[in-house]
Image (cartoon, rainbow, N blue to C red):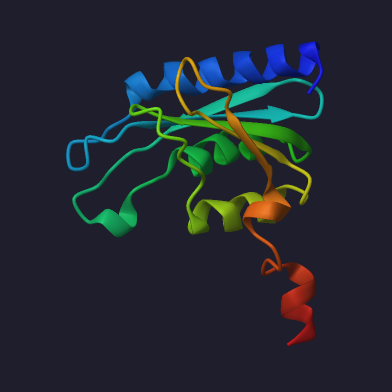
Length: 140
């Protein structure tokens, strides 16, 4: 990763950390923040919003994608994800599928391993190979 890429990734990760303060997590007490960068440099953030009926909870990555899409953005470069524990959390399966709906396999996924650690970096294709897609549905 070049110095400028590393700096941009660090900035994106910081945005994911900052938005955690707005998370609504009375049940898990596990705040998560996500910062999604478009191909032209716009950044959209999201945090998790829990509901007593867990299945109705919104995940940080989904909220960030929704913010971007509702404003007309569909071309994404990378996303940073951070939890309050800085434990290297990756997007869950549901969020990976949501990202796959709007992002290419080469979307860079940056995961927060803590202040003193290099963040783990993946591509969406690595995290979710053989995704369900429009093409998959057309073949069935």
